[in-house]
Image (cartoon, rainbow, N blue to C red; front, side):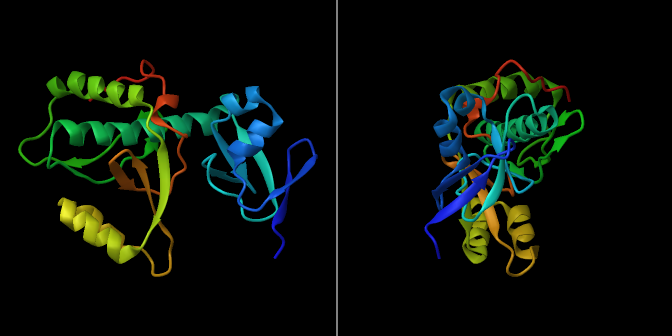
Length: 206
């Protein structure tokens, strides 16, 4: 197997790069402006993290803020993860369930340990979200063994997550995304770090 792969860009030009090169590295090679503007990559039509290695010949398009639909979904997905991390920081023992982007924002479902959340909790959660964003922690994709992930979730008291991990089809790659010590099972993609989010561009409403 060749150690080089061929990456074809939207303008039809092609680059020979080492197998395992990331879209972030290709963007940096093209120019610092593009490297700064890139939010994610579309590899053979699939939106992926900038730092995910490319292992075969592929068509590559870099996603920037100009790609409004893709960029908005990425940002909303990241806000959802930051929301979940913030809630678990403030309310230890809260279990997380699902938290996707939606057509008009983002949400996360929680199973509180002690009491239901109220609207009076929202300002403190927002403040904690902005603290997490300011830390600018990398959002790192990891592939996990199913049994190890289930064991880890159970040890954390995440019974819902342990159950759902066990229900995924055999042979399916299971990925989590980590922000510091916090992580959740997720297919992604995500921005490179929490600091890519605008701390003033969201509002918790309910």
